[in-house]
Picture 1 (tube, helix red, strand yellow):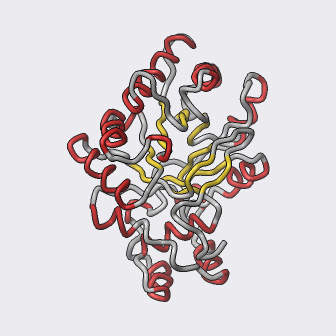
Picture 2: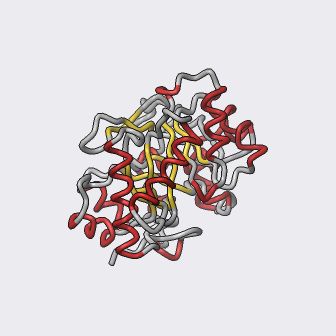
Length: 283
């Protein structure tokens, strides 16, 4: 990995013709009045990957930005997520379809649809996946995956999944929470790993080690963290509603963190204790 990485770089998703942009734009809790503006700013700046969820309550705003940005729909990778199943596969499928319509319109699609959490239990996870497989078979989701799933959850899928492995596992990842067990498992099985909270919601902006590394490269701490994620082979999803920060979070393609400095950042790992949202259970 070197500064030859570009904003236009993509990674292939397993067993599919789909490619995912290496850098995404997150809209977690971006308020509805702000979300359209932030997405338009991101697309104008050069992002081609937007990550939302039913839980964020702004799928319609992401859809509006996609339609009004002037960027061809096929050039933008749009992801959403479902948190919990309905009573049946069909009813759960209807919940999925509602999201697709908000983002892509009546005849539209999403590029990636994730199960947001592992918390609905074995039966719930199976029901969610089977509903997603139906959506995938119809081309209304170009790829499907999971979020906050550990090794045990993904292994359990082998007993029922028509589509395995999941194309993506989106988990919390940054130097303080590296989740090495699940990351290695995903790598060994060809599953793309997405990193949410890659800039740790700025909680670590004054961390002395991080500040030292950032000074060395003449970059903001947020830029170092995003670059770190890219060099780890993850797909980082930084979120911001500040126009300046949206642009600067993308300005990470003109420098390389050295092997030694990557090791310095690697040494910050606190395992599960370093999570600010959720570390997966690998049981």
